[in-house]
Length: 219
Image 1: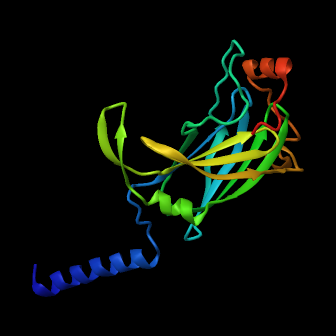
Image 2: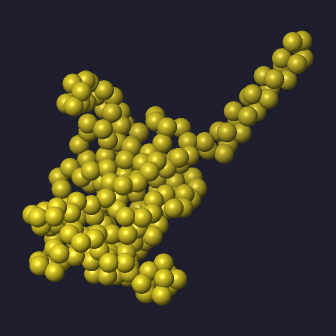
Image 3: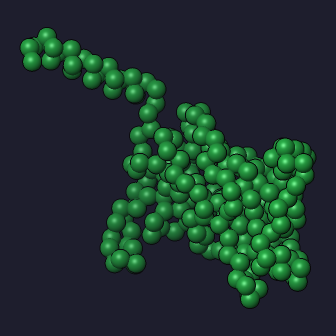
């Protein structure tokens, strides 16, 4: 390759790198962060959409939809009241290509009521700072020390329109992010496109509600 061609290739590479910087390509210490959602025991939830907006105002629609993670022991011995000290990651997916999150929007159906809610969840600056901080931590399940990052946002959705958010990471303690009171979606399921139809909760959930009711106020 002659010097002129080499110079052209180098200039093109630099231009592409600068263009990536100009457009704000995410520079995180991991490939992507994860959004997961769950519901208290028996309090079944159907997620219509879970969207994210990052700090560069890029919108990631439909980051999650469908049934949220839930435990429904058939013996009705599960306790739906309150939130676990260490929530699981929930059901969800990686939000690929996103920078740090600024806002989450969730619209969901609480099947045990039934009612449709939505909530806007602002992610604080302190939370984003924690997502960039690596911590030396011991993982008991494999007996190793690692540099861990909190790169999972977990959202708990409860009857009455309550949304609770934690920041999670492998082998790291969860951090409370926010508790939000959602709003009733007056149009109903799928913004009125489902003609008011709610599918029935699964059998254990329905059996629990029939016997014990919904523990409003515990979330």
